[in-house]
Length: 252
Image (cartoon, rainbow, N blue to C red; front, top):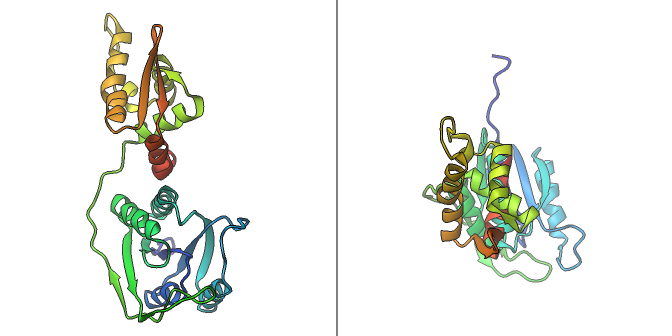
């Protein structure tokens, strides 16, 4: 029994312009560890009120372990990707996500991340809303609500792997993608038995098109342009956002 590991209660909390709505839920849920999401600490564009340190002091004084994670809480894809990556990293524990303490886009990204990973989202209703430049947006806590969520499927890891490769090396040809698939043993290649096939290259291209190119094209994540006898693949802005949101799947 000495080797038994008890799951920890981990809270992912955007460090926005809040104090009570950060601290009180963490204490109410008896959190073991808090991961504070904060924009680049060296950025001169982000205002950091003094009560942020009070938040940290209150958590430390309660014996709660805290860690600060860099995240642009005002960007949807940064928020989604960071929260989903952390939820996936700590999936063996009980992960809670505070949707009330950051920006509106953080709340949206956090909810999507919870739907994809199984983390538990919650919202904190304040008693009053009357903040200012040096005061939190809200004060007091009226109610903490665990929110219902519906499961959504994460994208295929091989799609994220392809987006990552094309982003780093674009423009690339379909032949490049097949060679990359062989090197990484991606499913569209690894599950193809070319033994005894008269023209195995044709099979590779067919599987690349049906399992990789067409799904990514249909979602607007890539563009394919033909020059001479080659077709070149590039990543769109939507594809870059998808990669940013689900890059953590490359580590799974």
